[in-house]
Amino acid sequence: MDIFLDTADIEEIKQAAALGILSGVTTNPSLMMKAGQSDYKTVTQEICSIVQGPVSAEVISTDADSMVEEAKVIGQWSPHVVVKVPVTEEGLKAISRIAELEVDPETLCEGCPWFGECDTDIETARDLAELWGIRTNATLVFSANQGLLAAVAGASFVSPFVGRLDDAGHDGMEIVAMIAEIFDTYGFDTEIIAASIRHPLHITQAALAGAHIATVPWGVLRKAIGHPLTDVGLERFLADWDKVKKG
Ligand code: E4P
Image (tube, rainbow, N blue to C red; front, side, top):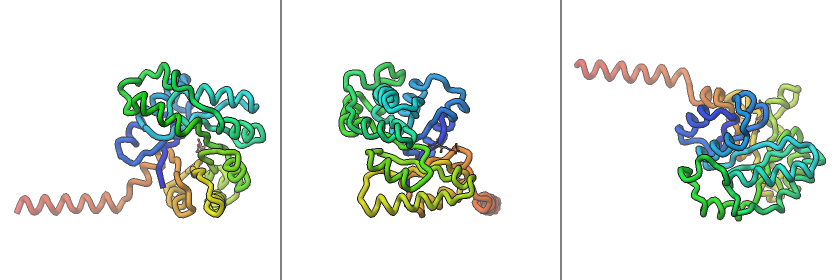
């Protein structure tokens, strides 16, 4: 299972990337607001240049025509960008139409401030865009049916919101497991992103439930790395080594 970071905070993304365990990032308008980011394009391009993996940027329109227009723009920012679309009737229409779109190689990565220093050169970017087209992440998934329908519509990723389901008194991880079983049975290529992760146990449970990815807030990821017994064990090893050196 891959680990994505659920944030729009550049410093958090750099710290997680330095750990060598980061495969992608998910953002949304609330995370942009929290990180104090208003230039959606520039911040998304910076995240793409750091991560070199799928980076979700969400549409803010609610009707299919406008979502598709937004996707055409967002899809040109980077081959790594994934357009996040909510699962509604209009959202499903948009997902199926976006799946048919092609990226314009001439304007791909246009205006990117990290152009030239990014690990993805323009030739590679064009090859990837030709291969992938414009990928979508079906977001705000709260049922197995929503996950299934998004996959049928052609979504590359679906994001069941585990924590918000738990908050509402449901078992969020059960939805992840159901979607995983359905995708497995019918051979969908769509990847499951366990989203709305609230604590380290959610990461383990997502892996066991068959999620391909868990998108995790930085605070939760740090908690998952640490363990008090690791700290105590390390302290003891260092203290013993000190004694060895002193003879
Ligand atoms: C994922 O794509 C969403 O941005 C995110 O996981 C939502 O999490 P929340 O329920 O903590 O807002």
